[in-house]
Every structure is written in structure tokens, then in C-alpha cells.
Image 1 (cartoon, one colour):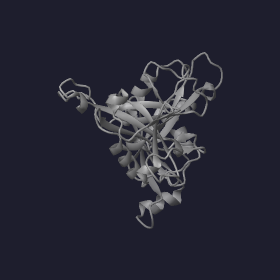
Image 2: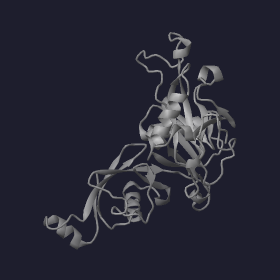
Image 3: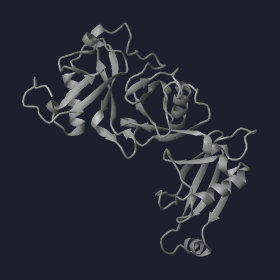
Image 4: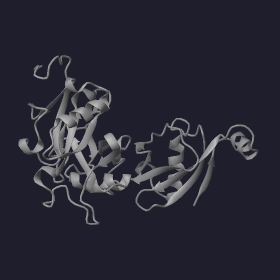
Length: 301
């Protein structure tokens, strides 16, 4: 346990005297691998770059190996407790990104940065991964993501450009480039370790089997951040008509269900279709588009 006061003496004196508004916060810096903690008392205007330098001195880790994460987002050196809206006892997660011992200079600049953006129930769970090996399996990255946000890895799925990513895929195989984004969604139902029924269990009737369908709102693309802002996972009974799912999705958008079109592989999906009839598999991807003309249900746009 280490406590370090950062900030000018007038700030410390104000806090010690109990007068005025507090001008510092006590923040916990926790190593993601070892769970070791260092507590810093930071002035509200203290740059996080300075905190990183002090952390490096205390832990004897090169400062260029350190990456700070707060609420799942990368912390920049120019950020401050004020800009990050930190409060007492907030936690900053510290990742140590090691470079090759035989590499010259700061190799970090050459590392590939891949952003994983949580969708729907994982909104706000955005993590930045630093990759040295483009052939690392996406299954390994999925496990790392699950460990960091403390969820069961079996509930997670990855999407890239609207297509489902398999665990055996790699960034190289997917031809992922700089600034690309992987979307992460969470399934609603999985096989539990306490005897819970699997979604594909034979004990259910064929029409009662539940699969997870991914619905991607293609109109939610944000060109500024280069990623989709709405990817939703719904558990659907195998024999259920998709009309009900469309209504549920429309309600989440505060839109008229008749203004939505479901597409799979570019082909329109009817409201009365069922996953069984269309032979959908678990984690099938449905693209949702919006139309401006919906005078009748048979109107083609």
C-alpha cells in the first residue's frame, strides 16, 4: 500500500483544514495481473501522466509499458481526475504491456491497437487491446475481454463488419486494419454449470428450442468513431414468428415496427418467418434497415 499526495501545498492544506470544497481524490491503481494496489491522493488538476510516472517509480516498471484504464476506457496522459469525473476510492486498472527485450527503442508505437466496443447490455465496456502478434486467436482475446469485465466468456460473441467472429479466427485472417473496431455482445441464455438446461437441449420440443439472434441496426453507423452504435442480441424460440422480435426492437428505438426491414445475407425476412423455417443457427446475424414508406406491409422499398 502506497499513498502519494499530488498537487500543490495549498490544495493539501485546504483539505486538511476541512474548509472549502475538496481538491483531491484518493484513487486506487490496481495491477490487472497481480491485483497489487497502489493508492494515490491526486489533486483534481493533476495530469494522469504524472501519476503514471510515479506508479512506474514505485513498481519499478518502465513507464512506456504502462496503460491505465478507467471505467473500461483508456486514460490519456493529459487527462485529470476532473476531466475523468473521478471520486474517492475509484479504481484505475493498470495493464503492463511488455516489449521484446531485443527490440530497440520504444516498440509500443509499432504495436497494433484493436478496440473492442461493448453493445447493448455491455454498453460502456470498451477496451483497447495492444497486439504484437496478429495471428493470436480471437478466442484468446475473447477470454481476456471476459476476464477484464468479469463475465462468463461463454456469454460473449464478437462481430466484425456485421459478421460473426469464430474463436479460431485471427486479426490477420480477418484482415483487420488500424482503427478497426470489434463489437462485443452478450447472450441472454447459456448452459449453466448447475444443471441448467442448454438452449439446444433435446429435452425441449423442437419449436421451444431457444437460439440467440444478433440484430444489427445498419443505420446506427457512426462515421466519427468508425463503429456501430446499436447491436442487440435477443433469445428467440425456434418456432416463434419474428414479428414479435421486430416489435420489441422497434420499441427499443421508439419507432414504428412497420418502418423496419429484417435482412439476412441481403434477402428480406418476412414477419411470419420462424428461425426453424429459415434454418437459423445460434448467433445468426440479422441486419435491420429502416424505410420511410410503410403504407402497407407488402410495400417493397
